[in-house]
Length: 551
Image (cartoon, rainbow, N blue to C red; front, side, top):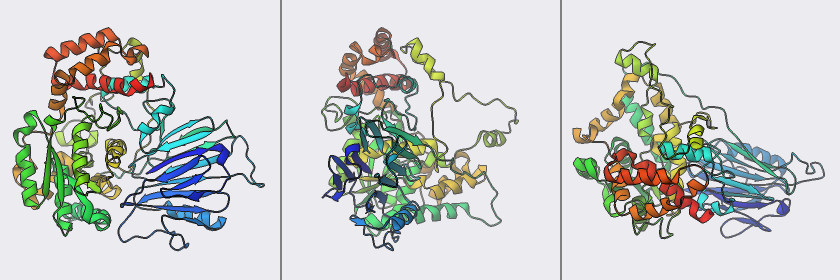
Protein backbone atom coordinates (compact mmCIF):
# COMPACT_ATOMS: atom_id res chain seq x y z
CA UNK A 1 0.00 0.00 0.00
CA UNK A 2 3.02 2.26 0.50
CA UNK A 3 6.28 2.88 -1.30
CA UNK A 4 8.81 5.31 0.16
CA UNK A 5 12.42 6.35 0.58
CA UNK A 6 13.44 8.38 3.60
CA UNK A 7 16.82 10.09 3.86
CA UNK A 8 18.05 11.28 7.24
CA UNK A 9 19.38 14.50 5.69
CA UNK A 10 15.79 15.44 4.79
CA UNK A 11 14.41 14.99 8.31
CA UNK A 12 12.89 18.29 9.42
CA UNK A 13 12.55 19.74 5.92
CA UNK A 14 9.16 20.60 4.44
CA UNK A 15 7.22 18.00 2.49
CA UNK A 16 5.24 18.96 -0.59
CA UNK A 17 2.56 17.12 -2.56
CA UNK A 18 3.27 15.75 -6.05
CA UNK A 19 1.13 14.05 -8.64
CA UNK A 20 1.71 10.60 -7.16
CA UNK A 21 2.45 11.34 -3.51
CA UNK A 22 4.78 13.55 -1.50
CA UNK A 23 8.43 14.62 -1.75
CA UNK A 24 11.08 16.24 0.41
CA UNK A 25 14.60 16.61 -0.98
CA UNK A 26 15.73 13.11 -1.95
CA UNK A 27 12.91 11.50 0.04
CA UNK A 28 9.51 10.51 -1.29
CA UNK A 29 6.30 8.77 -0.19
CA UNK A 30 4.04 7.19 -2.82
CA UNK A 31 0.74 5.67 -1.71
CA UNK A 32 -0.64 2.96 -3.97
CA UNK A 33 -3.32 5.00 -5.65
CA UNK A 34 -6.31 2.81 -6.51
CA UNK A 35 -10.09 3.10 -6.67
CA UNK A 36 -10.44 0.74 -3.69
CA UNK A 37 -8.02 2.75 -1.54
CA UNK A 38 -7.68 6.27 -0.18
CA UNK A 39 -4.90 8.14 1.58
CA UNK A 40 -4.80 10.76 4.30
CA UNK A 41 -1.84 13.12 4.84
CA UNK A 42 -1.41 15.65 7.66
CA UNK A 43 1.50 17.72 8.98
CA UNK A 44 1.95 19.83 12.12
CA UNK A 45 5.17 21.64 11.32
CA UNK A 46 7.51 19.02 12.81
CA UNK A 47 5.82 15.79 11.73
CA UNK A 48 4.10 14.37 8.69
CA UNK A 49 1.66 11.47 8.73
CA UNK A 50 0.63 9.53 5.62
CA UNK A 51 -2.00 6.82 5.95
CA UNK A 52 -3.29 4.51 3.21
CA UNK A 53 -6.41 2.45 3.82
CA UNK A 54 -9.07 0.39 2.11
CA UNK A 55 -12.22 2.31 1.37
CA UNK A 56 -15.28 1.02 3.22
CA UNK A 57 -18.70 1.67 1.68
CA UNK A 58 -20.87 4.05 3.66
CA UNK A 59 -18.12 4.93 6.13
CA UNK A 60 -16.16 8.17 6.38
CA UNK A 61 -13.00 8.64 8.36
CA UNK A 62 -12.29 10.72 11.43
CA UNK A 63 -10.30 13.13 9.27
CA UNK A 64 -13.48 14.76 7.93
CA UNK A 65 -14.39 16.12 11.36
CA UNK A 66 -10.89 17.58 11.55
CA UNK A 67 -11.32 19.36 8.22
CA UNK A 68 -8.89 17.02 6.42
CA UNK A 69 -9.63 15.80 2.91
CA UNK A 70 -8.33 12.50 1.57
CA UNK A 71 -5.64 12.69 -1.09
CA UNK A 72 -4.30 16.07 0.09
CA UNK A 73 -1.64 17.24 2.54
CA UNK A 74 -3.34 19.26 5.27
CA UNK A 75 -1.54 21.29 7.94
CA UNK A 76 -3.05 21.09 11.43
CA UNK A 77 -1.87 21.84 14.98
CA UNK A 78 0.00 19.31 17.11
CA UNK A 79 -2.92 18.51 19.40
CA UNK A 80 -5.24 17.68 16.54
CA UNK A 81 -2.40 15.75 14.88
CA UNK A 82 -2.11 13.39 17.87
CA UNK A 83 -5.86 12.99 18.25
CA UNK A 84 -6.41 12.26 14.57
CA UNK A 85 -3.50 9.79 14.43
CA UNK A 86 -5.11 7.75 17.19
CA UNK A 87 -8.56 7.89 15.58
CA UNK A 88 -7.22 6.79 12.22
CA UNK A 89 -5.93 3.56 13.79
CA UNK A 90 -9.51 2.48 14.47
CA UNK A 91 -10.33 1.96 10.77
CA UNK A 92 -12.08 -1.43 10.31
CA UNK A 93 -10.33 -2.48 7.08
CA UNK A 94 -6.67 -2.67 6.11
CA UNK A 95 -4.46 0.39 6.71
CA UNK A 96 -0.82 1.40 6.99
CA UNK A 97 0.44 4.56 8.68
CA UNK A 98 3.83 6.26 8.24
CA UNK A 99 4.83 9.06 10.63
CA UNK A 100 8.05 11.02 10.12
CA UNK A 101 9.36 13.06 13.03
CA UNK A 102 11.74 16.03 13.13
CA UNK A 103 14.05 17.49 15.81
CA UNK A 104 13.10 20.59 17.74
CA UNK A 105 14.56 22.73 20.50
CA UNK A 106 12.48 20.78 22.99
CA UNK A 107 13.43 17.40 21.50
CA UNK A 108 16.88 17.48 19.86
CA UNK A 109 18.18 14.31 18.22
CA UNK A 110 20.03 11.72 20.29
CA UNK A 111 20.99 8.06 19.85
CA UNK A 112 17.46 6.94 20.74
CA UNK A 113 15.51 9.46 18.68
CA UNK A 114 12.77 7.89 16.54
CA UNK A 115 13.02 9.36 13.06
CA UNK A 116 10.04 7.50 11.63
CA UNK A 117 7.46 4.89 12.58
CA UNK A 118 5.41 2.61 10.36
CA UNK A 119 2.35 0.77 11.62
CA UNK A 120 0.06 -1.79 10.00
CA UNK A 121 -3.59 -2.66 10.48
CA UNK A 122 -4.93 -6.08 11.39
CA UNK A 123 -5.63 -7.51 7.92
CA UNK A 124 -2.12 -8.17 6.64
CA UNK A 125 -2.85 -7.43 2.96
CA UNK A 126 -0.03 -5.82 0.94
CA UNK A 127 2.55 -5.54 3.73
CA UNK A 128 5.52 -3.21 3.43
CA UNK A 129 9.01 -4.71 3.04
CA UNK A 130 11.78 -2.60 4.59
CA UNK A 131 15.52 -2.03 4.04
CA UNK A 132 17.65 0.37 6.09
CA UNK A 133 21.21 1.33 5.16
CA UNK A 134 23.55 4.34 5.46
CA UNK A 135 21.03 6.93 6.54
CA UNK A 136 18.21 5.77 4.27
CA UNK A 137 15.06 3.77 4.84
CA UNK A 138 13.27 2.16 1.92
CA UNK A 139 9.79 0.69 2.09
CA UNK A 140 7.82 -1.02 -0.67
CA UNK A 141 4.86 -3.36 -1.09
CA UNK A 142 6.85 -4.93 -3.94
CA UNK A 143 9.97 -6.55 -2.50
CA UNK A 144 11.38 -7.05 -6.00
CA UNK A 145 12.20 -3.33 -6.10
CA UNK A 146 14.33 -3.63 -2.96
CA UNK A 147 16.50 -6.67 -3.67
CA UNK A 148 19.14 -4.61 -5.51
CA UNK A 149 19.78 -2.76 -2.23
CA UNK A 150 20.90 -5.93 -0.46
CA UNK A 151 24.53 -7.05 -0.43
CA UNK A 152 25.71 -10.22 -2.10
CA UNK A 153 25.35 -13.35 0.00
CA UNK A 154 22.50 -11.83 1.99
CA UNK A 155 20.44 -15.02 1.73
CA UNK A 156 19.36 -16.13 5.20
CA UNK A 157 20.67 -19.73 5.46
CA UNK A 158 18.14 -20.76 8.10
CA UNK A 159 15.16 -19.50 6.14
CA UNK A 160 16.62 -20.85 2.86
CA UNK A 161 17.08 -24.36 4.26
CA UNK A 162 13.53 -24.31 5.62
CA UNK A 163 12.19 -23.17 2.25
CA UNK A 164 13.99 -25.95 0.37
CA UNK A 165 12.86 -28.56 2.88
CA UNK A 166 9.24 -27.48 3.31
CA UNK A 167 8.56 -25.24 0.30
CA UNK A 168 7.41 -22.66 2.84
CA UNK A 169 8.34 -19.10 3.71
CA UNK A 170 6.79 -18.54 7.12
CA UNK A 171 5.21 -15.12 7.61
CA UNK A 172 7.47 -13.16 9.97
CA UNK A 173 9.41 -9.91 10.30
CA UNK A 174 12.54 -11.73 9.12
CA UNK A 175 12.56 -12.88 5.50
CA UNK A 176 14.52 -15.08 3.15
CA UNK A 177 17.13 -12.31 2.95
CA UNK A 178 19.07 -10.72 5.79
CA UNK A 179 18.50 -6.98 5.71
CA UNK A 180 15.02 -7.30 4.20
CA UNK A 181 12.34 -7.04 6.87
CA UNK A 182 8.56 -7.38 6.67
CA UNK A 183 5.98 -5.34 8.57
CA UNK A 184 3.53 -8.01 9.69
CA UNK A 185 -0.08 -7.31 10.68
CA UNK A 186 -0.49 -4.93 13.67
CA UNK A 187 3.29 -4.58 13.97
CA UNK A 188 5.16 -1.32 14.49
CA UNK A 189 8.49 -0.48 12.87
CA UNK A 190 10.81 2.19 14.28
CA UNK A 191 13.68 3.82 12.44
CA UNK A 192 15.75 5.38 15.20
CA UNK A 193 19.14 6.86 16.00
CA UNK A 194 21.29 9.75 14.82
CA UNK A 195 22.31 10.64 11.28
CA UNK A 196 24.25 7.80 9.68
CA UNK A 197 23.77 5.43 12.65
CA UNK A 198 20.11 4.53 12.33
CA UNK A 199 18.63 1.20 13.31
CA UNK A 200 15.43 -0.46 12.15
CA UNK A 201 13.37 -2.59 14.52
CA UNK A 202 9.94 -4.19 14.24
CA UNK A 203 7.87 -4.93 17.34
CA UNK A 204 5.22 -7.65 17.21
CA UNK A 205 1.75 -7.05 18.71
CA UNK A 206 -0.07 -9.06 21.36
CA UNK A 207 -1.82 -12.24 20.16
CA UNK A 208 -5.30 -11.71 18.73
CA UNK A 209 -8.05 -13.18 20.87
CA UNK A 210 -9.58 -16.36 19.48
CA UNK A 211 -12.68 -17.81 21.19
CA UNK A 212 -13.09 -21.46 22.01
CA UNK A 213 -15.97 -23.61 20.83
CA UNK A 214 -19.35 -22.83 22.31
CA UNK A 215 -22.83 -24.30 22.18
CA UNK A 216 -25.70 -23.26 19.93
CA UNK A 217 -28.72 -21.60 21.48
CA UNK A 218 -31.99 -23.42 21.05
CA UNK A 219 -33.43 -22.70 17.61
CA UNK A 220 -30.22 -21.10 16.33
CA UNK A 221 -29.44 -21.38 12.63
CA UNK A 222 -25.64 -21.22 12.25
CA UNK A 223 -25.83 -21.45 8.45
CA UNK A 224 -28.02 -18.36 8.27
CA UNK A 225 -25.68 -16.53 10.64
CA UNK A 226 -22.66 -17.56 8.54
CA UNK A 227 -24.40 -16.29 5.40
CA UNK A 228 -25.33 -12.97 7.04
CA UNK A 229 -21.78 -12.33 8.20
CA UNK A 230 -20.30 -13.06 4.76
CA UNK A 231 -22.87 -10.88 2.97
CA UNK A 232 -22.51 -7.99 5.43
CA UNK A 233 -18.73 -8.05 5.05
CA UNK A 234 -18.93 -8.16 1.27
CA UNK A 235 -21.09 -5.03 1.09
CA UNK A 236 -18.17 -2.95 2.33
CA UNK A 237 -16.31 -3.69 -0.90
CA UNK A 238 -19.16 -4.29 -3.35
CA UNK A 239 -20.71 -0.88 -2.76
CA UNK A 240 -17.34 0.75 -3.44
CA UNK A 241 -16.31 -1.15 -6.57
CA UNK A 242 -19.27 -3.10 -7.97
CA UNK A 243 -18.73 -1.89 -11.54
CA UNK A 244 -15.16 -3.19 -11.52
CA UNK A 245 -15.53 -6.28 -9.35
CA UNK A 246 -14.54 -9.84 -10.19
CA UNK A 247 -14.09 -13.14 -8.36
CA UNK A 248 -11.74 -16.08 -8.62
CA UNK A 249 -13.68 -19.34 -9.04
CA UNK A 250 -11.79 -22.61 -8.84
CA UNK A 251 -14.85 -24.80 -8.46
CA UNK A 252 -14.04 -25.53 -4.82
CA UNK A 253 -16.07 -24.74 -1.71
CA UNK A 254 -14.27 -21.50 -0.80
CA UNK A 255 -14.58 -19.66 -4.07
CA UNK A 256 -18.10 -21.03 -4.58
CA UNK A 257 -19.22 -19.41 -1.32
CA UNK A 258 -17.60 -16.08 -2.19
CA UNK A 259 -18.86 -15.98 -5.79
CA UNK A 260 -22.41 -17.05 -4.94
CA UNK A 261 -22.63 -14.56 -2.07
CA UNK A 262 -21.31 -11.75 -4.24
CA UNK A 263 -23.53 -12.56 -7.21
CA UNK A 264 -26.60 -12.36 -4.97
CA UNK A 265 -25.63 -8.84 -3.87
CA UNK A 266 -24.56 -7.41 -7.24
CA UNK A 267 -26.93 -5.66 -9.63
CA UNK A 268 -25.01 -6.88 -12.66
CA UNK A 269 -23.54 -10.24 -13.70
CA UNK A 270 -20.29 -10.96 -11.88
CA UNK A 271 -17.14 -11.72 -13.86
CA UNK A 272 -15.32 -14.81 -12.67
CA UNK A 273 -11.87 -16.19 -13.43
CA UNK A 274 -10.46 -19.66 -12.97
CA UNK A 275 -7.64 -21.99 -13.94
CA UNK A 276 -8.15 -25.25 -15.81
CA UNK A 277 -5.93 -27.77 -14.02
CA UNK A 278 -4.17 -30.91 -15.24
CA UNK A 279 -4.20 -34.53 -14.15
CA UNK A 280 -6.83 -36.08 -11.86
CA UNK A 281 -8.17 -32.64 -10.96
CA UNK A 282 -9.73 -32.44 -14.41
CA UNK A 283 -12.05 -35.34 -13.55
CA UNK A 284 -14.81 -33.04 -12.35
CA UNK A 285 -13.37 -29.52 -12.15
CA UNK A 286 -14.81 -28.35 -15.53
CA UNK A 287 -18.30 -29.49 -14.53
CA UNK A 288 -18.06 -27.84 -11.12
CA UNK A 289 -16.96 -24.51 -12.56
CA UNK A 290 -19.60 -24.67 -15.31
CA UNK A 291 -22.34 -25.40 -12.78
CA UNK A 292 -21.36 -22.43 -10.62
CA UNK A 293 -21.21 -20.11 -13.62
CA UNK A 294 -24.65 -21.18 -14.81
CA UNK A 295 -26.38 -21.24 -11.43
CA UNK A 296 -25.11 -17.83 -10.30
CA UNK A 297 -25.01 -16.06 -13.67
CA UNK A 298 -21.27 -15.60 -13.81
CA UNK A 299 -19.44 -14.28 -16.88
CA UNK A 300 -16.64 -16.80 -16.70
CA UNK A 301 -13.10 -16.85 -18.09
CA UNK A 302 -10.91 -19.93 -17.82
CA UNK A 303 -7.14 -20.07 -18.36
CA UNK A 304 -5.52 -23.49 -19.05
CA UNK A 305 -2.51 -24.07 -16.84
CA UNK A 306 -1.05 -26.43 -19.45
CA UNK A 307 -0.41 -23.40 -21.68
CA UNK A 308 1.38 -21.41 -18.95
CA UNK A 309 3.56 -23.84 -17.03
CA UNK A 310 6.01 -22.58 -14.39
CA UNK A 311 9.43 -21.55 -15.75
CA UNK A 312 8.63 -22.91 -19.22
CA UNK A 313 9.83 -21.01 -22.32
CA UNK A 314 7.80 -17.81 -22.64
CA UNK A 315 7.43 -17.51 -18.86
CA UNK A 316 6.74 -13.99 -17.62
CA UNK A 317 9.38 -14.61 -14.94
CA UNK A 318 12.01 -15.39 -17.56
CA UNK A 319 11.38 -12.55 -20.00
CA UNK A 320 11.32 -9.75 -17.40
CA UNK A 321 7.58 -9.08 -17.29
CA UNK A 322 7.38 -10.35 -13.72
CA UNK A 323 9.93 -10.68 -10.92
CA UNK A 324 11.21 -13.88 -9.34
CA UNK A 325 10.54 -14.02 -5.60
CA UNK A 326 10.56 -17.44 -3.92
CA UNK A 327 7.78 -16.59 -1.46
CA UNK A 328 5.34 -15.60 -4.18
CA UNK A 329 3.01 -17.82 -6.20
CA UNK A 330 4.74 -20.92 -7.58
CA UNK A 331 2.34 -20.98 -10.54
CA UNK A 332 2.88 -17.32 -11.27
CA UNK A 333 2.70 -17.71 -15.04
CA UNK A 334 -0.90 -18.86 -15.22
CA UNK A 335 -2.00 -16.36 -12.57
CA UNK A 336 -0.25 -13.60 -14.53
CA UNK A 337 -2.32 -14.56 -17.56
CA UNK A 338 -5.50 -14.69 -15.47
CA UNK A 339 -4.85 -11.27 -13.92
CA UNK A 340 -3.88 -9.78 -17.28
CA UNK A 341 -7.24 -10.87 -18.67
CA UNK A 342 -9.09 -9.56 -15.64
CA UNK A 343 -7.33 -6.20 -15.94
CA UNK A 344 -8.22 -5.98 -19.64
CA UNK A 345 -11.87 -6.57 -18.68
CA UNK A 346 -11.69 -3.55 -16.37
CA UNK A 347 -11.56 -5.55 -13.13
CA UNK A 348 -10.05 -3.47 -10.34
CA UNK A 349 -11.04 -5.53 -7.28
CA UNK A 350 -10.77 -9.32 -7.30
CA UNK A 351 -12.34 -11.49 -4.61
CA UNK A 352 -10.54 -14.70 -3.62
CA UNK A 353 -11.44 -17.78 -1.62
CA UNK A 354 -8.37 -17.64 0.63
CA UNK A 355 -9.06 -18.79 4.16
CA UNK A 356 -12.01 -21.11 3.61
CA UNK A 357 -10.18 -24.27 4.66
CA UNK A 358 -8.85 -22.62 7.80
CA UNK A 359 -12.28 -21.35 8.93
CA UNK A 360 -13.27 -24.86 9.94
CA UNK A 361 -10.03 -25.92 11.56
CA UNK A 362 -10.31 -28.23 14.55
CA UNK A 363 -8.13 -28.30 17.65
CA UNK A 364 -6.37 -31.62 18.37
CA UNK A 365 -8.63 -32.21 21.38
CA UNK A 366 -11.72 -31.71 19.20
CA UNK A 367 -10.44 -34.17 16.60
CA UNK A 368 -9.79 -36.77 19.28
CA UNK A 369 -13.28 -36.25 20.72
CA UNK A 370 -14.95 -36.66 17.32
CA UNK A 371 -12.94 -39.80 16.63
CA UNK A 372 -13.62 -41.18 20.10
CA UNK A 373 -9.94 -41.25 21.02
CA UNK A 374 -8.68 -40.83 24.57
CA UNK A 375 -7.21 -37.55 25.75
CA UNK A 376 -3.81 -39.16 26.05
CA UNK A 377 -3.65 -40.39 22.46
CA UNK A 378 -0.40 -39.45 20.79
CA UNK A 379 -0.64 -36.64 18.25
CA UNK A 380 1.40 -36.71 15.05
CA UNK A 381 4.60 -34.72 15.12
CA UNK A 382 3.68 -31.85 12.81
CA UNK A 383 6.90 -29.94 13.50
CA UNK A 384 9.29 -32.55 12.12
CA UNK A 385 10.89 -31.62 8.83
CA UNK A 386 12.19 -34.15 6.30
CA UNK A 387 15.33 -32.76 4.70
CA UNK A 388 15.98 -33.24 0.97
CA UNK A 389 19.02 -35.38 0.28
CA UNK A 390 20.86 -32.51 -1.38
CA UNK A 391 20.93 -30.21 1.67
CA UNK A 392 24.36 -29.93 3.27
CA UNK A 393 24.79 -31.15 6.87
CA UNK A 394 25.08 -27.55 8.09
CA UNK A 395 21.83 -26.61 6.32
CA UNK A 396 20.08 -29.68 7.71
CA UNK A 397 21.18 -28.70 11.21
CA UNK A 398 19.33 -25.38 10.94
CA UNK A 399 15.97 -27.11 10.40
CA UNK A 400 15.61 -27.64 14.14
CA UNK A 401 16.02 -23.94 14.90
CA UNK A 402 12.92 -22.05 15.97
CA UNK A 403 11.83 -19.21 13.73
CA UNK A 404 10.93 -15.76 15.05
CA UNK A 405 7.24 -16.00 14.20
CA UNK A 406 4.59 -13.40 15.02
CA UNK A 407 1.78 -14.02 17.51
CA UNK A 408 -1.68 -15.20 16.51
CA UNK A 409 -3.37 -12.98 13.90
CA UNK A 410 -7.09 -12.28 13.45
CA UNK A 411 -7.20 -15.06 10.85
CA UNK A 412 -5.20 -18.28 10.58
CA UNK A 413 -1.45 -18.28 10.02
CA UNK A 414 -1.75 -19.71 6.52
CA UNK A 415 -4.52 -17.27 5.55
CA UNK A 416 -2.65 -14.14 6.63
CA UNK A 417 0.46 -15.52 4.91
CA UNK A 418 -1.48 -15.94 1.65
CA UNK A 419 -2.97 -12.46 1.94
CA UNK A 420 0.47 -10.97 2.51
CA UNK A 421 2.57 -12.80 -0.05
CA UNK A 422 -0.02 -12.85 -2.85
CA UNK A 423 -0.87 -9.14 -2.81
CA UNK A 424 1.95 -7.89 -5.01
CA UNK A 425 1.04 -10.12 -7.95
CA UNK A 426 -2.43 -8.53 -8.05
CA UNK A 427 -1.19 -4.99 -7.50
CA UNK A 428 1.34 -5.24 -10.33
CA UNK A 429 -1.67 -5.64 -12.64
CA UNK A 430 -3.54 -2.73 -11.05
CA UNK A 431 -5.90 -5.01 -9.10
CA UNK A 432 -6.68 -4.90 -5.38
CA UNK A 433 -7.25 -8.36 -3.81
CA UNK A 434 -9.98 -8.93 -1.23
CA UNK A 435 -10.33 -12.08 0.88
CA UNK A 436 -13.90 -12.24 2.28
CA UNK A 437 -13.33 -15.52 4.16
CA UNK A 438 -10.48 -13.99 6.18
CA UNK A 439 -12.51 -11.28 7.92
CA UNK A 440 -12.01 -11.16 11.70
CA UNK A 441 -15.74 -11.34 12.34
CA UNK A 442 -16.15 -14.52 10.28
CA UNK A 443 -13.06 -16.17 11.76
CA UNK A 444 -14.32 -15.33 15.27
CA UNK A 445 -17.77 -16.75 14.53
CA UNK A 446 -16.47 -20.02 13.09
CA UNK A 447 -13.99 -20.52 15.94
CA UNK A 448 -16.91 -20.27 18.36
CA UNK A 449 -19.00 -22.89 16.53
CA UNK A 450 -19.36 -26.35 18.04
CA UNK A 451 -16.84 -28.79 16.53
CA UNK A 452 -19.49 -30.80 14.69
CA UNK A 453 -20.30 -27.75 12.57
CA UNK A 454 -16.65 -27.30 11.59
CA UNK A 455 -15.88 -30.98 11.11
CA UNK A 456 -15.45 -31.73 7.41
CA UNK A 457 -16.55 -28.14 6.78
CA UNK A 458 -20.18 -28.96 7.45
CA UNK A 459 -21.33 -25.34 7.73
CA UNK A 460 -19.88 -24.43 4.34
CA UNK A 461 -21.35 -27.47 2.62
CA UNK A 462 -24.79 -26.85 4.09
CA UNK A 463 -24.72 -23.23 2.91
CA UNK A 464 -24.03 -24.34 -0.67
CA UNK A 465 -26.75 -26.99 -0.36
CA UNK A 466 -29.27 -24.28 0.51
CA UNK A 467 -28.12 -22.34 -2.52
CA UNK A 468 -28.99 -25.24 -4.77
CA UNK A 469 -25.55 -26.56 -5.61
CA UNK A 470 -25.27 -30.20 -6.60
CA UNK A 471 -23.39 -32.87 -4.72
CA UNK A 472 -20.68 -32.59 -7.39
CA UNK A 473 -19.81 -29.10 -6.05
CA UNK A 474 -20.51 -29.80 -2.38
CA UNK A 475 -18.56 -33.09 -2.27
CA UNK A 476 -16.08 -32.99 -5.18
CA UNK A 477 -14.53 -36.31 -6.13
CA UNK A 478 -11.04 -34.81 -6.44
CA UNK A 479 -9.19 -32.02 -4.67
CA UNK A 480 -7.80 -29.31 -6.90
CA UNK A 481 -4.16 -30.30 -7.37
CA UNK A 482 -1.61 -28.08 -9.11
CA UNK A 483 1.25 -30.55 -8.67
CA UNK A 484 0.53 -32.28 -11.99
CA UNK A 485 1.52 -29.07 -13.75
CA UNK A 486 4.66 -28.62 -11.67
CA UNK A 487 5.86 -32.16 -12.31
CA UNK A 488 5.08 -31.84 -16.01
CA UNK A 489 7.10 -28.66 -16.46
CA UNK A 490 10.12 -29.82 -14.45
CA UNK A 491 10.29 -33.04 -16.44
CA UNK A 492 9.57 -31.28 -19.71
CA UNK A 493 9.85 -27.70 -20.99
CA UNK A 494 11.55 -26.23 -17.89
CA UNK A 495 14.14 -29.01 -17.56
CA UNK A 496 16.88 -27.39 -19.72
CA UNK A 497 16.67 -24.21 -17.62
CA UNK A 498 16.73 -26.13 -14.35
CA UNK A 499 19.76 -28.14 -15.45
CA UNK A 500 21.61 -24.91 -16.29
CA UNK A 501 20.70 -23.44 -12.90
CA UNK A 502 21.91 -26.55 -11.10
CA UNK A 503 25.20 -26.71 -13.03
CA UNK A 504 26.88 -24.08 -10.81
CA UNK A 505 24.30 -23.18 -8.18
CA UNK A 506 24.74 -20.18 -5.92
CA UNK A 507 23.16 -22.28 -3.18
CA UNK A 508 26.24 -24.49 -3.33
CA UNK A 509 28.56 -21.47 -2.96
CA UNK A 510 26.56 -20.43 0.09
CA UNK A 511 26.95 -23.87 1.67
CA UNK A 512 23.24 -24.71 1.59
CA UNK A 513 23.15 -27.48 -1.03
CA UNK A 514 25.60 -30.02 -2.37
CA UNK A 515 25.65 -29.34 -6.11
CA UNK A 516 26.53 -32.88 -7.12
CA UNK A 517 23.80 -34.46 -5.04
CA UNK A 518 21.30 -31.85 -6.25
CA UNK A 519 22.00 -32.66 -9.91
CA UNK A 520 21.94 -36.42 -9.44
CA UNK A 521 18.77 -36.30 -7.31
CA UNK A 522 17.03 -34.13 -9.89
CA UNK A 523 18.04 -36.43 -12.76
CA UNK A 524 16.80 -39.47 -10.85
CA UNK A 525 13.53 -37.75 -9.98
CA UNK A 526 12.93 -36.79 -13.61
CA UNK A 527 13.18 -40.46 -14.53
CA UNK A 528 10.97 -42.03 -11.89
CA UNK A 529 10.43 -39.79 -8.87
CA UNK A 530 7.05 -39.28 -7.17
CA UNK A 531 5.05 -36.24 -8.24
CA UNK A 532 4.92 -34.71 -4.76
CA UNK A 533 8.72 -34.33 -4.69
CA UNK A 534 8.64 -31.85 -7.56
CA UNK A 535 8.34 -28.92 -5.15
CA UNK A 536 11.82 -29.38 -3.67
CA UNK A 537 13.47 -29.06 -7.10
CA UNK A 538 11.23 -26.16 -8.03
CA UNK A 539 12.13 -24.43 -4.75
CA UNK A 540 15.83 -24.80 -5.51
CA UNK A 541 15.37 -23.59 -9.09
CA UNK A 542 13.31 -20.50 -8.26
CA UNK A 543 15.75 -19.56 -5.48
CA UNK A 544 18.62 -19.82 -7.95
CA UNK A 545 16.78 -17.57 -10.38
CA UNK A 546 16.24 -15.00 -7.66
CA UNK A 547 19.90 -15.10 -6.64
CA UNK A 548 21.34 -14.74 -10.15
CA UNK A 549 21.18 -10.91 -10.31
CA UNK A 550 22.76 -10.76 -6.84
CA UNK A 551 25.84 -12.87 -7.65
